[in-house]
Length: 254
Image (cartoon, rainbow, N blue to C red; front, top):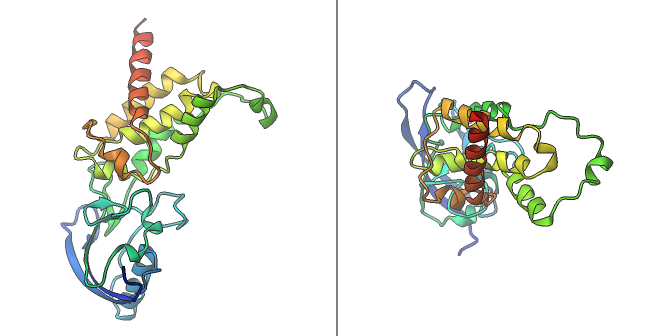
């Protein structure tokens, strides 16, 4: 692939607010360095739009290091773009070639209403976490916590589940707009650790109930969420959450 600068055509979704109709807007971006990140390319475009007296394109971003999960762009039909295992801020322009037309949209989900352009409101995730994604018992200081022996396979599974950054790619790629991968990662992380046992049943019941209340769809069982997750969160977490939910529901009935 050439390392020379590229000229690209961007078809970008523009929408004033969640109630506006919205439409695609075409922009030509020239002399794009292959070493730029996708967000840096948008920064350059926005600087030009501002200079021209036009409204810059709104998009979410923060850390730009693949940690915060804010950079929620749907690029050429895939969340975070064509490269597996990266967030949009980690996607470099060398993944495209000169003359390409790139289509950029916001996350598409009824539970993620558009704030403006490519920025969406993902506070539904925050409310799901508030419904149980925490430990409120006294876990002692760090030394005490480290004295609790945890089998390595369970510790590894908890660590892998905790890698979820809550970006919402799983929701955006699911044809039903399901949040099962996100919620199951948060449930699994705490269900696998000793500190999470006290609130185990209430946690899964509360978080699943909030997920349903927010309007997320049902799991399609196609596995697209795992494929598009930038952190590779496993579908095994969904199976674990389902087991947790069934057990908690049965216990509640007793």
